[in-house]
Image (cartoon, rainbow, N blue to C red; front, side, top):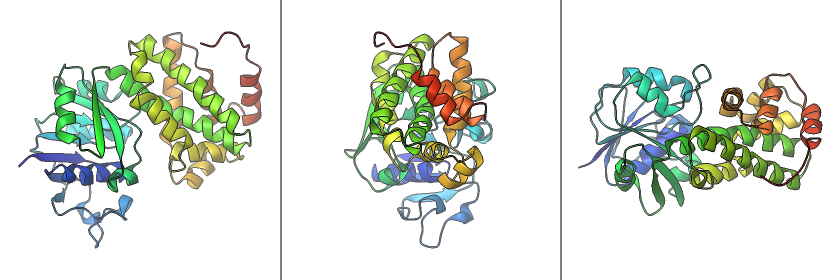
Length: 319
């Protein structure tokens, strides 16, 4: 029987483990503290969805599996990859950019485990809906031709459609940048600027992602796909998005710390905004919305100041 390992027992890792069990595989879910499993058989971060009988929770870093899904926060990715003892292909399921090095997930894998076969999974997916088995889609990207398709065939189901790509840059950038634009979208709603303003901002934000992707060597088609436009739409409109909730609180006048409490935790887009604006600067790409979010979360400008700056920018042909 096929064996799938999932590293990380947060909401997303737990949802992936529940989904992996639906493929008919036996599943090993790695958690730092296996005893944290609730008495009803569910993990704390996704307590409404008990684990199937074919999912085993462990803290053993010696992983034997046909594929290992790594679903830990970006800030812990390097340390977790260093701990793992496995030769199985790794599918990285985290999104973001490491601030110090400006590395995407696959860059971190290459630095920590040179030569290890890896891929990245990204798309418009809320964990609780995947756990519930509701219809969803995502993309798996890998540099090696055919590797992403093989993983997609192994992990996909009729309800969780997995597409493949070789554009690792575009897929990873979309997953990181959507969190930043989602904060801006939340600010727009929180400040009472209306749905027209949000739609305009999300569209212009997609343009920023596209320009940066092309500068980095990504593909325009990827930006308009699941890991780009798809994830952006979900994160900028879904109330389950922590980044959107943080932005909405900021728009209502909360501080970054207060917004994190209101939203239920720190949003990834806060740190990512700083990293992406630095990356865009290096490649001479204009990203005014991302820069506005970075200025807001660092306290160097107010919502009113940034709104005026963005609205006073010169207009011309749409690009």
